[in-house]
Amino acid sequence: MSGPRAIRATCPNRIDLAGGTVDLYPLYLLLGRATTVNLAIDLTSTADVALIDRPVVEIESVDQQAQGTLAPGEIPSSGPLALAARAVDGFWSGGGLRITTSNKAPKGSGLGGSSALFVAIASALEKLDGRQTNPHALIQTIAEVEAGLIGIPTGRQDYYAALFGGLQQLEFSAGRVKRREIPLSRRVRDWFDHGMVVAFTGEAHFSGRPNWEVIKAAVEGHAGTLERLRGINDAAARAADALRASDFDGLCAAIRLDWSHRAELHPEVTSPRLDALVKIALEAGAQAAKLCGAGGGGSLFALATPDKVESIRTAIARHGAQPLDLAPSPEGLRLEAGEAR
Image (cartoon, rainbow, N blue to C red; front, top):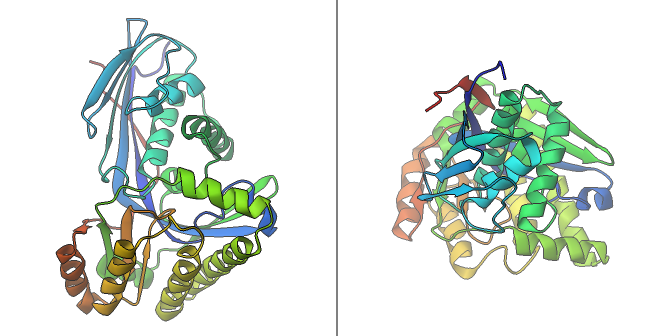
């Protein structure tokens, strides 16, 4: 092989501002067309992938403090090495590898870290293998491979944030995903640079069960579920319009609308403690607050005027949340030649 022997791939994580869940197959088909709006952030997922001479796959997860050596074709069904092993099975043509991964976001934070890591590993493997897949085709394959890992269909918004970065509107319809970049104008960037609060609630989120229950209810025609999904979809379209118009109040109203529908989507989306954290953020001055991802734990997102940020961070920290230091990431996937050890 004449290409590089080692690649470092780094991808941003994301905040779903509005429209999460409707990117799940087949929910967007039931809605006719669905919209998701997200923002890439500079909490990153990184994969260092190197060729080695031994016919094994050595995997180390730095943040999860786990490592192991797998035989060719060996795929753990679960655990901290399973994601990397699935990526190798789906994207590598053969030969020995050493893979070292790390996530800056807390595990279970609901910021798309595992999906971003999947993009990083798959992209590094393709680069080492001398291949370059169309981004939309790459995302489709990653989604299918990851669905095999977690056992249910996956949404695709996380992969787009990881690959492209920035602020984006994703429109899902039959056989198509349309990505529409939303400019991070100075005014909009200032909202997120100086008015955004993100905090890990301390409760790890797992989207699998609530997402599957929502899919089943929607497919079975549950009127309440479909009504809330339409409300989430409407909120996302409003959020995209507000961002393009630099309408701060309109964006905050759209985020509040999204959460009002999401909180009623499934009993495991929220809890009394998580509801309390959202309420505390609002009472401390946030103009909008919600949980990221499918809920059930993870991270709280709040948007406010800059003068209210410190009081919000203090108030939610007092109730057990861990404020995270982050900023928007205009850059998506970054590939660099690594060091072969």
